Image (cartoon, rainbow, N blue to C red; front, side, top):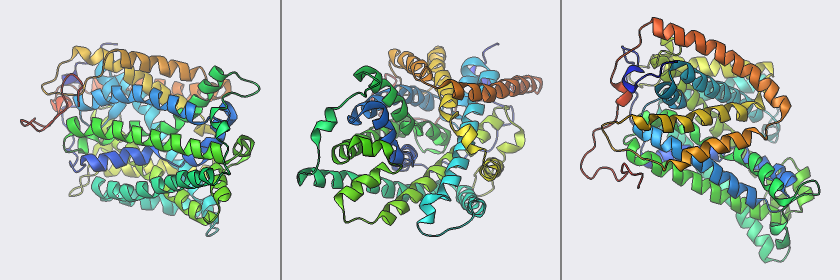
Amino acid sequence: MKRLRPDEATPTQAAPPLKKALTTPLLYFFILGDVLGAGVYVLVGQVAAESGGAVWVPLGVALCLALLTAASYAELVTKYPRAGGASHYATLAFGPFAGFVAGYCMLAAGIVSVAALTRGFGGDYLTEFVTLPVAAVSVVFLAALALLNLRGIKESTRANVLATVIEVGGLLVVVVLGAWVILRGDGDLDRLTDLGTPEKGALSAVLSGAVLAYYSFVGFETSVNVAEEARDPRRSYPRALFGALLTAGVVYVLVGVAASAVVPTATLVESSGPLLEVVDAAGGVPTTLFSAIALVAVANGALLTGIMSSRLAYGMARDGLLPAFLGRVLPGRRTPWTAIVVTTLLALLLSLTGDVAVLASTLVLLLLVVFLLVNTAVLVLRRDRVGHDHFRTPTVVPVLGVASCVLLATQIEGEVWARGLIVLAVGVVLGIVAAARRRAAGHTGGAEDRESPVRRDGDSDVGGDGTV
């Protein structure tokens, strides 16, 4: 299929621009809040089951793998700072078909993720305080998130700042309590070097554990869909992205050290709330406190993923890959209201039907497809020159990013592949139709794909060589 030039990838009639309201700190907290989601509260036990007591090792390896793809995103975001994310980059590099497939995979993963988090919000954590029908909770929960999303990106990200502080605070409590248990002599530091299981050697244990740990870093990719709403994405995005990932990595490693040193590995593996085991071992902190923190984490993850899904749908509509009505913007607030409404209704439908469990295990596979396209798009789009400075990652990084996607995909179970291929097949068919309709509609021209703020002297310290 003919590859579109960057100046051919935007519909003739551009949608109204989104409001530029995100500062570097707000963007940093957006990414950090999305990465430090609810998964970390159950992740440690799963990683311990695969890798043994040295949980911090696969967590560190997973961070390195995530940084590879993050570097590719940093280059593309600062080169083409607009909504649409992976879909937009794949369209520029490979044409509308690949763009649709990338966007479809992201949308499918995002909507299912919001639905799963919605059901999680109405589950065991909420019953610590009140028992309500899951269906009723889903309706109220998603309606509240949609209203916050409609109100504006600034208001949404400010709420995220507060929620992220609470999430990080809860994890730091675990770290402090773990240190206290170790200092009083009740911990076992020998478990921190216990790598491997009876079924696996050390290398195999690290790899399988890193695959699980990699899931915990997923979330940074959603931030590209709000880059257009950043005041200076060329300067702020690399700082916010790498800063947030490194912060999350440090917190995860410290949590892994605390949990492994304080709680026996067998107990971690068997527990559905491994961090609560640390709290119990230390004593003095009520379990309801952690239930409240978990609810905040779930709600924050759903809010940020909902923002991503709506901005992605908006960007794909503007590229002619989805119906044009999804590109409508709310007057005054300048938020993509039709995209917010549609993605919220789809998430509600999934949460009410209970089919989320069937699709949830395909999320990582779908995202690996997206990451593969993003890493290869970086290499293809090196031919394109834009009229502003942008972050540039060394060529070896996206190559290693491609290799990491392939490596992680080999660890996906066959049953998940069977379900995931069905979802991908649907996306392929819809992508063929969307690409044909887009060509027939004559979506060519437009300068928006090269949109970027005019650089003022001394305004940016992100150079074309990738230095920050």
